[in-house]
Length: 491
Image (tube, rainbow, N blue to C red; front, side):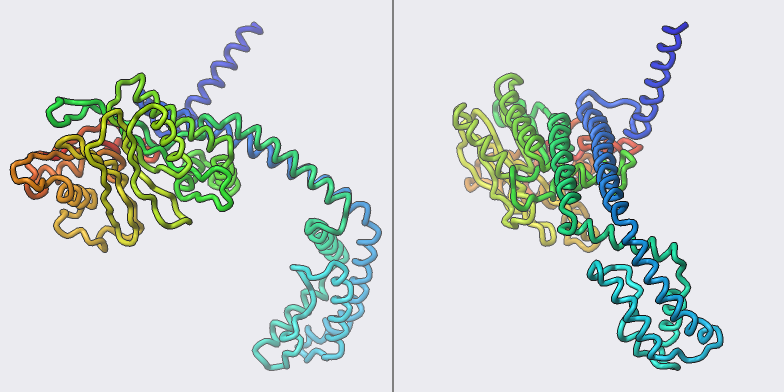
């Protein structure tokens, strides 16, 4: 019976967990290539559970320490509360009857009250919850606009009980101690707690670094036609730009939307959860793991999976440096686009990696309202390959300049890239353009528009992309949606 009971409990616990995961993740089942999304969600949930437990324990230790300090000062706090109560009781005996009879309040009595309040409250310096009457209020005359506020304030102060005054005195004492510098023993304990919390967080970041270093995009492998070679194997991946390693002013532009999304879908909408995730993804452990993840992806693509050309998006300076070094050692070719010139934003570079020799390298600049991005481009014989990452915008689509692009920004970019790379200087040359990457729009909609309205002099346009969603955000939607990562081939 004991074994049966244990097995039953284990079974129903697993069922409850599975049901919870289904409801949180929004899918009953993921495509094999989407499994990283489930791993990321599961890891983020466990990470937040453990992280918030650490924070609760740290807060509890600090609370116990400050309660002990306040208890030491109990007699002193009660004494100040008693002095305050005596002042209020004496002055209240004069002012409260006048207030009830709607008579003017004597300035001299108000000044006496204020002086007593200020004298006792000043023990801790300036305080946020002060009973002292502000000067403009104190000077208010009967019949003036501010006089009712003065009467209301005086009535509230004079009506305070001893218990209320003692509680306010304790809160002022607490705030003063928490500012630091007034109690050496507590300050030392607090520093010890902070060091322990920091150490425990580092352990937690190390534990979950592998999963939290993932991108919110999946890797898209496709066989793509290329010139006279028939088809070649290509892969594109938006790697997600993490903050720079040990950056003085970390840039969270790339990871913040993902952290917000994880917190939201896991039901952790509090600021503490998002803060924990941001702290994790800007830690050395997670950033180093992310760099190694991208390096391993490029290396394995080129050496084990038979990939001819790798396209990357959201490349930061740290990742660029590591990929450049690896390509140099391996004898591979790599070309990066110009980085974004705003130091407060992501570098947002794209890249092309291959074993083939480039016949020519270039880049193209695209703009969406005030956002400018550069896409790496390389020519192999008569074929141009472009690694793209279309910028998003907060401007409503109806306010964008999408003239001649049939209301589609991705169509506008297709036209721009084709005009730049799809026309040869020699009239007899036949060029083709392969554009792969993150289109930040449903690309099955784009191919419909592009097929119906191909760019000028473009004889054919084809799409190569998976059937399933390619981003975590789209994966979490209730209804299936078009991928946003893939390849367009224009001839």
